[in-house]
Length: 351
Image (cartoon, rainbow, N blue to C red; front, side, top):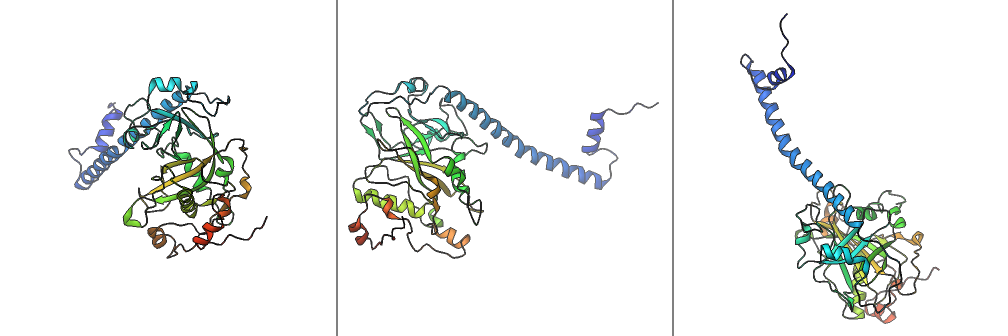
């Protein structure tokens, strides 16, 4: 009885052009080999990226265990670094804070480098990493005497759902139904915890939106460039511009002197938008003596969100922004004289 060729021999005969194969079979085998090589050239780097991201996730989980959120009252005039940061600072002296959103994977130390590039590609241990780590804008100030009026944090939107990827749910659930969007992520996460080295604080989300970063596609509103406010008018103008571009109007009020927190990440809201859009979440620090509760049921969608020309042309069918609809009564430092100057009419009170 003739011995049957082994599996690997038969596999090779089926794939590799062999003596005796006809021309059509040889062509088919060559096409298969080329396609398989192309597949490997694509799949291997992709698999390596995924494994790298999961490795970064595990590193982040280990780091998060080093920081224990402490609700012990800290004196308002505290000048000492909080004890909870001791271990993190020993590992990375660039540590400036810690951010956490309960019920999500956002649970990370925050670092600040000498530019906004290094920590895009380096982890908390300063090892090269596709995920990077959450970083504060290098121009922000965090000292024992206080911090910048608008603290801007950047984090990657990772495919495995880590770092700032969960922030996309704020925006997505504003559009998960045409008739009645759920706004579920905002309703479940209206408050963010962000501690600096010297202060524990919670922050109420008051708005979020998407922003163009490519001048070729229209207006670029630089939401992340205003790090301090020089006057009441300066603050009011910034908040009004943000709220015109916010997809949501919340019940959170604001006033000059409030501290602002901005979280920024990449997003891809439209087909063809490429890497030209950023998602930003805006929150203000809970004031001394203020409750941390938020009436999330009062949150509504912005009926006339201010976008940019590419969206008007490619997505909105020529629709263009023409009016500000945010109720500026929520801006407590904006008064009747400001409204008169801006030709703005406060809406009639309904409650």
